[in-house]
Length: 191
Image (cartoon, rainbow, N blue to C red; front, side):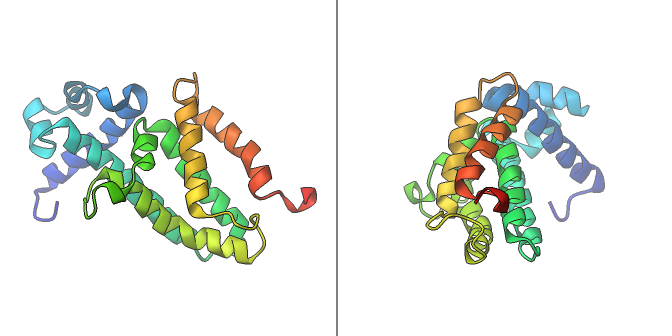
């Protein structure tokens, strides 16, 4: 986006925000035309930024993954390793529950397409971002022995997939994660 006019950058950001909302509502089949209408731009503007549905989905997922990676970095120096890990895991859970298709993307492995720079590498990117949080929590005794970031991302993905058709997937996924956390990292009072 560097070198773009200010209005083009604004349109891109607006389209991305509207697309995220529409994908949360309708999944990967969200209408590109509806996204353009809601953003107040024509279909030509939508197509200039996102030539096809795949490009749009990839941009939404990439933005969400980057936000989660930044969030993990922000939490890395937190004084409470358990809270930092669970805060980040809650954010990942909310993302997988509200952006339909992100859980599926997380379930794919970059190993199937080495070097591919697209949404299917979300799992590897989040593994890299969350691993320091898990290692630090393990060093502090805040997670059960043997728990890995891969375990936690698999758990979150499974919860998101299991609750996708629930009337409130984000709330149900969060509730189920809370139940699982007691097994992963019981609070000091229940240990």
